[in-house]
Image (tube, rainbow, N blue to C red; front, side, top):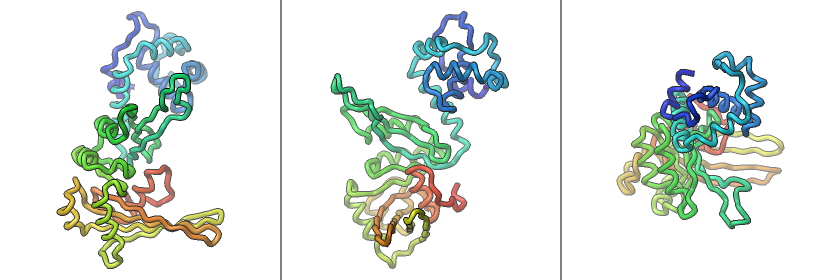
Length: 302
């Protein structure tokens, strides 16, 4: 609780000085409720009432469990921006001990389109800790902007040191790559036609079978489906760095995925920029982590 309170030290209690329930205890109950799948104030009050024995191991609860109205009053009165800043500190400290993959991705929230006013759906860019399955931060995309402008703001909120950031081709931008490297992190950025010249050079280079590379093959499947993924990584890119001067570039990668279903096979080649000389096995793990849980072995990746 001392470490938890330290993260929220800059958050002022908006209630009167005679509040019956400690603000930090209320927030801890909220956190526990959400971790167990609860959502609203009713869930929080029910959790507090039913889990008193558990909560009293680390909370005093001098006036018993808070009511639905208490949770509602606290969240109506809290400074939202101040709370977000403090919660970001909490998430950063929680994640500091883990050196894993953070996936940057944008999603539109379901049912957030307002037919009455014609307001467009709310679009959020999130930082997802793939190993811990936690959202580390989110930024709403302005209606007059796009994800590219939102990602730098999201990166400012994160502790990047020791983390590997993955992103799709939309975010394969020099500014984003530079911010990640300057923050002490590494990146694995998907490369497509929006960086046409660089994409053509990388594709031609990695498609050359005589290129000196590190390779790894992973096969899995089930229910009549067999998927084979070959990862190819090359660090022999001095000429590429000289030509394009991409921030922090240390290696390039190609993932060839072949899916066979009922004797029919499809193939897809994808290309990536890496700021760290990952082995082919490590690169495959990092890149597949972007889309969620993976069965690819870590091969000692740290």
